[in-house]
Image 1 (cartoon, rainbow, N blue to C red):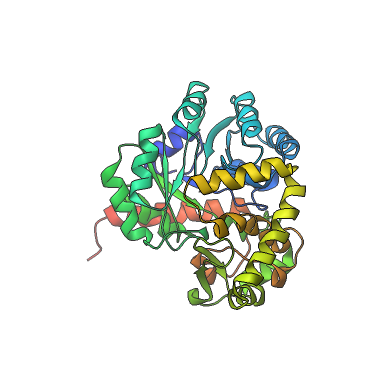
Image 2 (image 1 turned 90 degrees about the horizontal axis):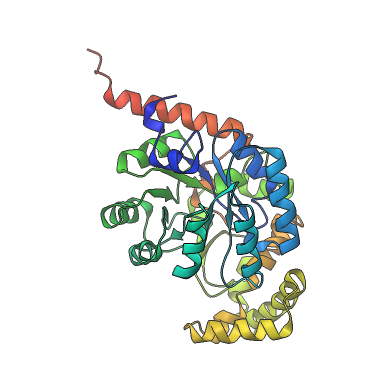
Length: 357
């Protein structure tokens, strides 16, 4: 393997290739993490959509399925955040990193660092990257606007160099990556590696039902994958489908009805008490979220679940990066990682080889 693919990221995470599988809710399960890890990448479990009991089982499954280290993703506003943190610390001999968006405070980050767990938040803006480093982040994942799920408006090609110039920790590039050309380009920018969600979702190791995967394969134009605020009030990039269009055209009353239904279903899934739900609601308000946006917060996991778990893609939403339009096959995670690594090595070698006469 080329020395060019041995970066600060591979050194810190202990993986063979600077390729990270991101934590997509309902998608990044133990099977996908094991497949990624065994192939030399670094995988994150998506704890943000897991109960404490399920996460414990999934961590145990990864521990049994591979001897490599792996990551866990969570959010501080999920009802079992405290329990997730304790589970991570309990398994710190194997959990090498945690990822998050709206993350923990400096005190909690210090607990992770003291246990040898790296903090690797995902950000979509320069100021968020700088703040994350101030709080103690060890690695920053930068997701440009091309990425799936919640995303900003700044493309990776502009956001990545901004963050690289502003912080002194390793930076991982996300948003728009799916092949070896992208990995070579990210390394040329100065990134320590790439992180991919949609590309790993579209593999044979993904738990997503075939009917839903077919909707991703059917996308041929990036314009079919756009950002909308209809789900939870924040820009979220998704594939156009009948449900999203209905949600967008249904008006405020319709959206609030969907939100209340989702919140009740999400409460049952997480075991959140009504008191905890109310506490979360008022905490979000105190942080500046609008009442409507707060009420809609449960929409995303519940509506994504319909498509990603229940296999009803036209009755839920389909988070996706724009790269889905460039993907036509569902290789295994191992085939994907090895192809990306081989292609990146060839492209990087071509940059330094003498031109033929």
